[in-house]
Amino acid sequence: MAKHEQTTEEEIIYVSKSELKREAQELHELGCDIAGLGKKQREKLPLTDELKEAMAVADKIRAKTDAYRRHMNYIAKTLRSTANVEEIQAAMDLMLNKNNQADVLMNKIELIRDEVIAKGDSKINELLNEYPELERQKMRQMARQASKEVKAEKPGKAYKELFQYLKEAIMP
Image 1 (tube, rainbow, N blue to C red):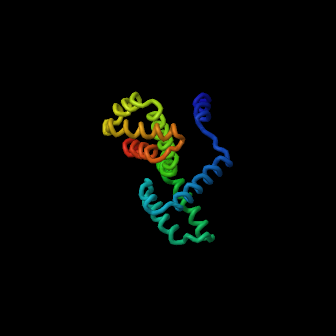
Image 2 (cartoon, rainbow, N blue to C red):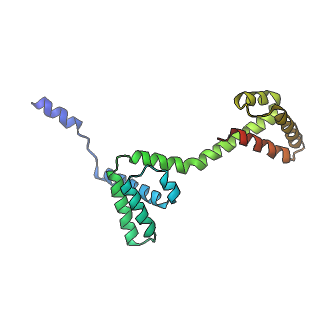
Image 3 (cartoon, rainbow, N blue to C red):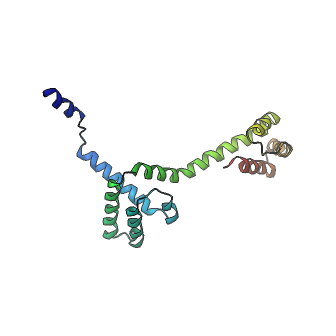
C-alpha cells in the first residue's frame, strides 16, 4: 500500500503561486495584444466564439477606463479556460513576426544581387536552376550594367532594377 501512495505522490506536479501569477499575467498580455489587433487580423486567429464576442465588446469600450481593464481581465480568464491558447499564441507570433521575415528575405535578395554582380554567369546559372522563371539574357544584361555602376562607385538604375527583378522572382 505504501508503494502505491509513493508513486501517486511523485506524479503530482507542484506549481508555485508566483508561477500561476506569471501565467495569468502572460494571458492578460496576450488578451491585450489580441484586443489591440484590427478586426481583419483577429479573424485570422483561431479564437472561440466566446472570445470573438469578448473582443467585439472590447472594441466598443476601447477607452482606457476601469471597465476596459476589467474586461481585459475577463478575456484573460476566458483564455485560461480555452484549450487552444498555444495555437492562438503561435498565430500571434507568426502575425507579428512577418516584418522580421520580410527583412530577412530582403537581405537574402540583396546578397544574391551582390553575388550575381560579383560572380556573373556562374551565379546566374545557379539562380536559373533554382528559379526557372528568370530570363538568362535579361539577368546578364542587368548584371553587366550593375557591375559597371558598382565599379564607377555609382550604384543606380541597373543595380536597383536587378534587385527588383530578383525580388519579383523570389518573393512568394
